[in-house]
Image 1 (tube, rainbow, N blue to C red):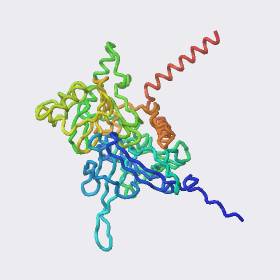
Image 2 (image 1 turned 90 degrees about the horizontal axis):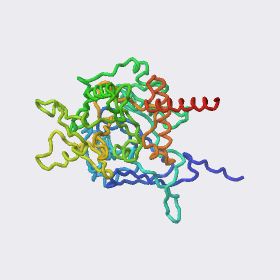
Image 3 (image 1 turned 60 degrees about the horizontal axis):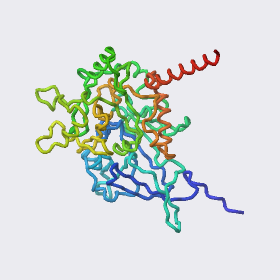
Image 4 (image 1 turned 90 degrees about the vertical axis):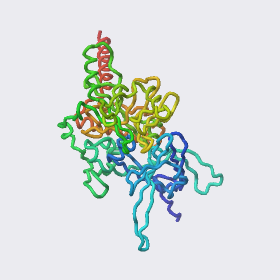
Length: 451
């Protein structure tokens, strides 16, 4: 009687060696590890705490345990002590890509307390894996689609810090399958706080419907990185009043990113490779502003109004390039990386937080990282942002490569729309305009056929 054939493990027909690669945006730092296919998927966790948002510029951080111990040459990365006694962020000092969390935990070994060090790799810097046959004669490696995701998101922690649920509301699942389990969601630390029931939203959508967006002072929202080296302000209230007056006069069109009903700026879901690598998360979130609506924090301008900020992104770049004492000290630790000709990505040179994206061909406006906003009502800053829920992911094509991020993109869109409907949140105005136009065209076509 023939022996039973072994069943494939984790979807693999045979054991393979998978090369995991983490690489920063500028490609100055690359880290690799080889693991057996049976060790996949990597188990990752989202953290929505205030610190992770303000140290990345994203609405969360997300990392998975790095296989293989200490990454080789990891000491070449720049270090920021996020929690001085326990967690450091390791990032590229040139392009700001966060690469690893270095975690320290005191453990008892043979009666002595020792420092256990582990590394968590940011999933956003993971490249498509390379696979090779175990025991193959030629040793050839190739990129190939894995039979399962490279990364499996197991849970979310510290959601309560967001006040409004942040991005966790559209990141509950990793696959479109409605029967797939919902990732565990903790209000605080894992196993030490309340666990949100699988099919419930936090906060309940009814509370969000009743909640009135707050405003700090005249509607200004602080733009602050974790270390405080970048301390600016988004003049969101002034912008909304200006746009409302502009529409009333009808003299010129509103900027493309302004909601014509609320005069808030759009909040986007961005899947572009460069944004992913620069922030270390798989889907980034931007909002948009005219440069004239940015300013220095009043605390940085004794006796002043806190403004006097450069009037364009070109002026901002020139201000940062000023030598010696000519550089305005209110710019703090702000730095930039030229990710492509005419494009600058501004970040904190001390703690790595993404701050601003700018392009020379639209120097009057910039993209602002949502995670670095300090809006009193919550992480999504809904007093200033009109979210593009029910719209599409910007640069979604960068995620549609047949890998695990493609499934994530499809699922996020489905989850975001489901949450929008449950909450009663308005459709993204560009989508509503498109649907109204298509309905009118269909009606006209039907009338023409009847005539």
